[in-house]
Every structure is written in structure tokens, then in C-alpha cells.
Image (cartoon, rainbow, N blue to C red; front, side, top):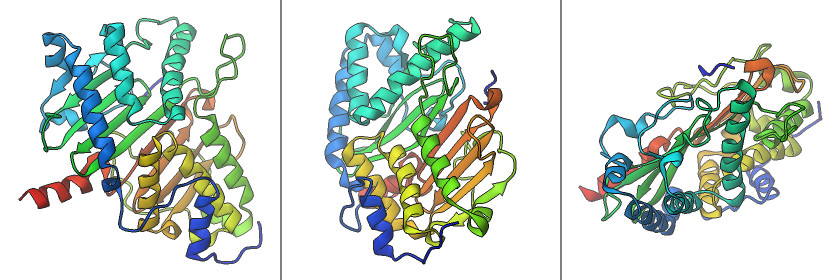
Length: 354
């Protein structure tokens, strides 16, 4: 268990593409809005972050709050390792509850369930591997970067093995998310375990399989970029913008039903976030051009065998790889290429500030 961790169709109109998104409950807002549509969320996050810090001891506060301009803010990873901040195992019940309150300002109910499921999967992995100390569901840490009082940007990250949530907060502007990483090992809990059959990111995988199987002939041929899975995500830590070109088939070349399949996958990722953030994310996709998105597949078309898929456009990159440990080990990332680590929002803040 290692961690390097053909339907006949017509070209759809832009209205049909957006309509495909609406069919899956995606809230479409007015053009010209992006992360800046969530300033109220930024205020909530500042209050929740301050409440958590206020419950920490002096030594915990020193560990929890790091410099805004330090390297640690961008030093995310999904491997098991020690992390800056304060780990769940070192928090009192009140401190832990306040940390979950901060997560609740970011995530939807499903997103919170996904985080809880990740902690459960880590416990399962510890039991399966006989290494409960190394595979520790308490080794998930919360860290804050910068000063959350005032009008300067600040950030926070909640992270552990196979989970990384990076958030940049711009008071009066809103919040910027991504990279967002969810993984699962095992991807499907095997028989004989109390949680047998549980799949943490199974809905995303099932939706992608439904999509690739709906493509036939030359359409499928354009979507498939390799007979073998890639072995891992490409845009990992420090490589967030390494995929410079789009591969696979453009969404504009798919039927309306197939486009809805693409939007279903995107909504599953965005839907881990609270409604205001998910709506802003989907608006960014629309403004970047939903018809410029590309869908790519590599590896087997059969579940249980190594496979990889990608959805990539100007304002979204989703990668999903299930290759390791007999295709029972998922790495999955969501990145906004224009807004990774809140880059676009920060540029706007600094332009206005100076």
C-alpha cells in the first residue's frame, strides 16, 4: 500500500450546455461573478477561525497560526506525514468541535460526511495494515496562515493522509478554494471488515464510468488518451499548473445527454462545498466557457481495473486516478487553474489596495 503517493449527436448550443448543468441542480448566477460572490462566507470563516484560536492554549496558538508569506501555505500534500498546525488528536473536545465548525463554513453536509468518511477510512487502513499508529485518524491538522483580523487576506488548511482542503479568505472579496484533494485507500472496503463495501468517492467514479461508456466510435477514441492509467494524478503538490494543454474530447463535441454526464461529475466535486461556494465555482466554469471543457480517459473501461479520468478547462481541472493496490486506491484532485491558492482574488485585492 504505497503513497507516492456512439450516439448520433448535434453540436449543442451554449444555452443547452448551461441547461445541462441546471438539470443537476447547479445554481447559475449572473455573469461577472466568481469567488467574489461569497464575502459573507469570508466573514463567517473569520469568526469561526477566531473562535477556534480562542480556545487554544498559548503553545497551541503558536503552532496553529503561521506566517502568511511563508512557504508552508502552499506546501500541501496527501501522504501521511507530520503537518503544521494542531492535529485532531491534540485537541480537546471543545477545540475539536470548533475546528469542525470552521469546516462547516466551507463544506456542505455531503462534504462534511466525506471528511468524516476519510477519517473512518484511515482507521480501516490502520486495522488492515496492522499499523494503527502510522495510519492515525487523529493525524489531521488545522492551520491558519496570517492574521484573520482586519482586511488583509489570510488562509487556512485542513489536511491529513488523502485529504487536503486549502482556503484563501479575502475580507470584502470572498473565499478562494483549491487545491482540494480527496483520496481513498481502500477505495472499496473489502469483505470481512465491519465497513465492507464502503466507497468514499464511489459516486464520482460511477458517474465517470457512465460517461465514458456512453461514448462510442470516434467520439470515444478522441476521449481516450491512453490504454493504461497514468499511475497517479499529474497536477500534484507543486505541480498544480503542470497540465498546460487540454486533452481528450471537447465537451462541445458531445451530445446534450453526454454533456449532462460531464456536468454531473463536476457537480459531485463542487457539491462537497456549501451552496454559496458551489454556485460560485460553477459560475466560474460558465464564465470560462463550459464548451471549452475537455474530458479524457486512460486505462480500463471496467471497474476494478486501473483507470484514470480528467475534466479540464480554463477554470477547472479534475483528475481521478485509481491505479495503486490493484485499482483499490484513489487519488483525486480539483484545481481552479486561474484561482489556485486564491491567486486571482489576491491579484484583485492587491490591485485595489495599491
